[in-house]
Every structure is written in C-alpha cells, then in structure tokens.
Image 1 (tube, helix red, strand yellow):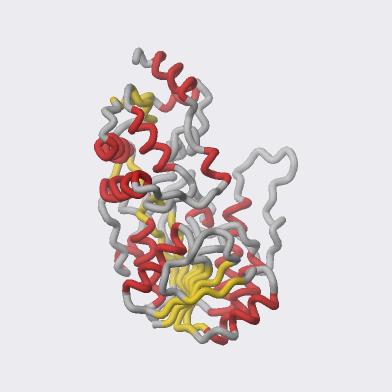
Image 2: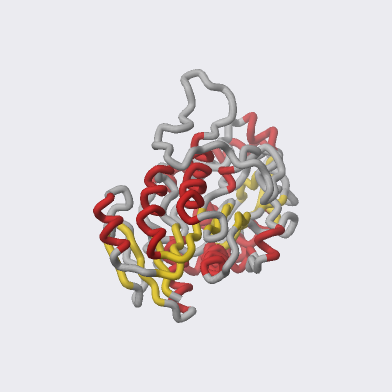
Length: 343
C-alpha cells in the first residue's frame, strides 16, 4: 500500500504514519513542517493545505492508494474541498478523521452511527455557523464546520471511496490536549485528589494507536461509511481511569469523589478544570456498533494510562498547543472543594 498522510508529525497523524510503516507500507506525509518531525522512513512533502499551488505540487507526488487526513481539525470545509479536489485524481480512497461533534445531538443525546449530522455545506468558509450575538442555544459552530468538511470529501470522492471516522476523546502517548497528562501529574503529587461525579460514571475514551490502526484498515478496505471511534459503552468508568492513574504514578493519591452538584456549585468548568467530567446525558453514550463490526479494537484503558505515563516519564513532550493550558483545576480551588467534602 502507498498512502498519503495529511499531517503525520504529531499525535494521531504521527501514530498513523508509524503504524503504516510498521505494516510495511510506503508513506508520504504532507505538512507545513512546523509541528515536529515525521517518523523516520516516511517521505516528507512540505506545504500549506490552504495554498492551491502547494496542493497542485503535492498531487504531482502521487499516486497513492489512499489518503488519511488527520490535520483538518481547524480547517474550513472549503479548504478541505480544495484539497480533496486536487487529490481525487491521484488517490484511490480518502479516510477523513472527523469528530462526534458533527452530530446534532452531541453531547445531550445518545448517539449511533445513524444519528442526524449537522448541516454544513462543503464549500463553507470559516465563518459558517458562528453564533450570533446574544445566542443562548447550543454551540454547533465546530460541529457544523466538521460536518461540512465531511461533505467536502464525499463531494469529491463519493460515498464508496470515503471513510469518515468520528472519534470522541482520543488519549495516549503524544497527547497534545493535556487531559490525561493532567490527571497523571495530579495523581503523582499524591494526597487527597478531587474526583468528579461518580466512580461508576461510564466514559468512552479511545487510544490514539487504536484509532490509527482502524484508519489504516479503512484505507485498505473497499467500503465507505461513517464510523464512531469510541470504546464500547459501559466498558470503562471514571473510577477506572483515575484508579489507573493512581496505580501508574505510584504517588499514593487518595480519591475523594465529589457529587456533580457540589462541583457545579463551586463553579468548576466542565470538560476542562476536571478533564473528561461533563454532566450532559449523551456525552458518554455513543454507540460504535458499525466500527466494532468493521474491526475496531480498543485496548484496555489501563494500558493507555500506563503507556502515557511511561511516555511522560521518558521525556516525552507534546507539541505546544493552547488547549494544554485550559486543563486542570488550581490547587487552591481543589483544596476548597476537598474541605467541603471533609477531606
């Protein structure tokens, strides 16, 4: 197999490129060369996806059996459309990594791979879906952008030649967002450790290496479709995650579980101050039946936690990203809530 990875230097893109090399595939990576180095053994092409001349030059490096697109998270649909237009004559298939945010019902409703996807035209610019001043309804901007990007790919490659992957939360070595690293570093400090909600609350994060493997399987397959890339419902809990962090770090942290209401009363920001904590009813109720039927395998969450800690302890450094600073509660605020719990 000959594949083109759009991205290829950090987190999911790097995991895809490395996994493809491990399979003996020929790998080309296309990026701006600003966010790290692609795995040794890949062929690098530098350029900007928003520059038509760079896309034309990239197409001249083909052909490829498939494109795996991991670098369009903040890209307007029309830019994805331009890239797909340039690559369609020289690529057999297109695997686009989207997100569960593309569903109209996320995070308030349970979802399946047949759930309604948000509106979003394939030629939309970066302003499409922005909220008007005073809007107090759901914030669908990001989801509409991603839904439009999905349609941009299928517009050029068709449904049969396009696989759309919709992950929820991706964790693992190389994470740049900072969710799991924050929990690991907090556990390593030891002492009473604020734990959000209920220990038996289900969660569905997936390991970056498992998303990468599934993306490559879809690149080699003859079928299109959309797939939710999440761990099975009910397999893992927040208690499992935090217990694994305590075990991996050996810091002796003692979990102190705080009810949702107490955290809300203290103004704890959902999703970020205590990463992965969110009270919306559908956030961790995402069916992945189609993906599992197509071969998606999710390794144990404890393995993801242990491997991420080993990466951090071994000097692993994520690519600098502004989202890292968003995550984590301050020690002072945590102490106030722990005191309210009698800890």
